[in-house]
Figure 1 (cartoon, rainbow, N blue to C red):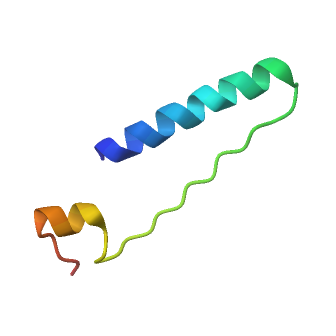
Figure 2 (figure 1 turned 90 degrees about the vertical axis):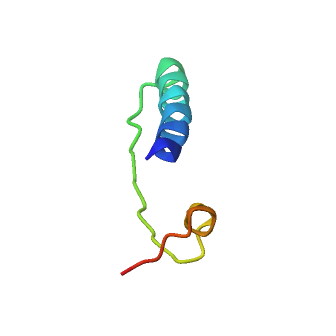
Length: 49
């Protein structure tokens, strides 16, 4: 989804800054949460199965 791109771009930029300063690993975690109350679902009138 397009909103994923907005979040991932910022996270990737932060990872680049952190790795430039410290030589420590940076871990990525992805949370996937689906709800009827999502603003995108309400705007587009999308329902869950």
